[in-house]
Length: 372
Image (cartoon, rainbow, N blue to C red):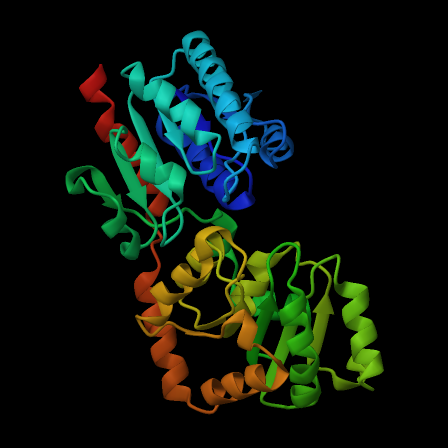
């Protein structure tokens, strides 16, 4: 079994591809994996560190406005297609799998035109333009959110699988996680983060939130500011006369390397609404307050958030409407109503898909015999 995985630009495309790659290795004996990306995307750094062979092609994304640069983009896409075709000829894959990002276009299209089985996975509730185009040509489409099914026309080849999550997310144990952070097990734990790089707007709102809940014996808060925003946030607290060390129920970190333990300790999440984050919190059945990143392509984070909000698993606050008072009111509304918190948790768990990886591997297996 030989498989090419492709997906790039952001971790949201890369990590699902790596999860699928590991799933293939575990399921198919003596599987060989090749990852195709670009030298400009995060995949050029992440994939080799994950111990997968990596090849790069020439490609870049279209500008969202009329621009001469788009002519150069189209030329690079043609170059990328030829390079991808050459890589496919050399590697001779049994299947090619794309997880989004503009690098997928040339690679998956070249495979489809050669009659090689192809599958794409869409992480977001609103599919990206690359996957919407590729869906017309591939053998199988797998999606994370039920809401995205409407954007893909041919129903028989579309499967709702969910998004694979890291194994350690399911393996972490709550009491051990609480002990790691020095938290009490009789308090409600709120986990706040803005993605790997943090979110300045969330950090600003958290100043008022910490002022409100410092020394509140009902709750404890773990807040990851992001590496870039940590010093600024600490200074904001100082300027506001807040000494977190005196509170005892607030922990502030620039980054959480043990996010699996943070999630295991949490009762309520405050975060952005990237697909990977939502996959992790729903698989654990965690209620959430979601603040979508407003500059995500095609505003897909808001679509992701609404997929949870519409089913009662989350509350949405638009980034433009977020401030400390709004966040405090929203938190208070949830934690004062234990039945609401319980119902949100149940709704979240219903959306979780612990078998996502297995279901994707079954879809891979399903398209292989047709071409053998």
